[in-house]
Image (cartoon, rainbow over all chains, first blue to last red; front, side, top):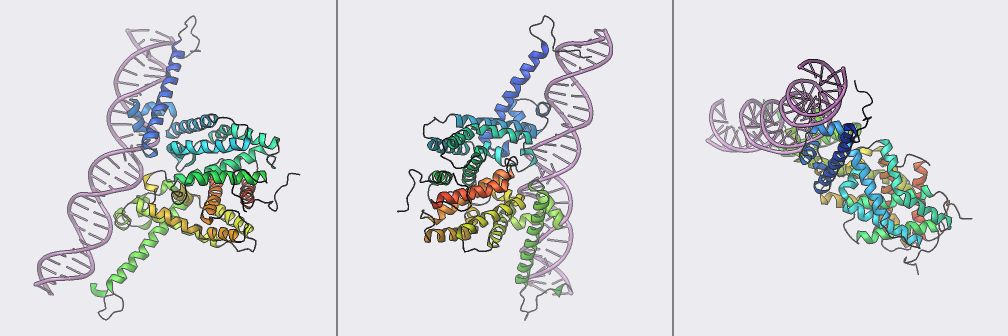
Length: 221
Length: 221
DNA sequence: TTTTTTCTCATGTCAGTGTTATAGCAATAT
DNA sequence: ATATTGCTATAACACTGACATGAGAAAAAA
């Protein structure tokens, strides 16, 4: 029977360890392939057979490695939020906190429009196959640590009147997410440019949070 | 004989007309059944075979009547927006325009949470089967006529500083839709009550639109 | 009345999906 | 050398959307 298999006496190259490494690499490769498939051909094309065919293995491998399609999609879900987090971190910091918040929102929008298929995986859980675990959903909130800290800074400097940075951050998230969602579903294609309205929406919300006149905002008189 | 049908020569009821009426009734019945299936078992269960089984006919009937699954879902899409429009019209009017706007938003949220499967059909077009026609998407905007007119009233009375009621209405829609969407995807289950944050989000946005202190809003000091 | 044409629908089929049971292969362990 | 273990390809099952075929009834024509 299997004793402590990981202990490879003098062996620097334990078989199990090597196997695990290989498994990890293979796992990453599979996720990358699935990611490409998702980005290139959309949600509909993301089938276990297609992934297996792309990787060059059988579907059994995918099932032993991820358990089910839900398991695989779960990882893509987390990967999507990691990408989003990275996109937000790439926003150049600014001394003007409000402008920085606006830039974060714009980066969020650009990411969502450029990676609409990922965005669908993250927010359109329409079937059990695309419904992530509760723990994953909770974990996804950590992608907004930058937003939360910036909001907290605004509260500290008394730019915002509210006191709960998490709550305010979620409000801003909802505003941005809502506009992006309607853009992606084709409801915002007509009339004025969507980008312009997006900016105006953010500025309006920030104005409501500051309770004071906001720069670059149209004035009543 | 088999001649018992409605074809009285002097008959007021033309055969074709009766046939069409029957078709229309049948069509409505099928949509009702599909609607029930959707509400009770979700998007995943909405298959042509299940609908046919529920109605008691073959799938061929559905295809001759709706062309494809897209065609059937299209009608459900429109029906969903009609239901939403009806829900908004059910909101009791108020003299206070801002409170009325808030009530509209709350009704929107209640509708979305209570009919989450319909909401998914309307806003989670993840596959070609659930992607409505462009004309349907444009038509859906008419469900918000009440919102637009109320916003216009706010502009007329100079409560709002903006001038384009359509734009402002879309901003409000985006805010409400975003919060509801995050609620439905399970991102807003923790910490404070979602309903409370929802109200706060609306009030904040309206405050940003009015550029003045908003009642029932926490003050800085 | 009889025949022909037209229309509708049930059946069966095709390609595709997620998932799994079976069986085979390679490498350890005994 | 044999037994055991872990991994994987194959093939199958129960589904799905969509459609071609053919049967049967109703309507029109004779």
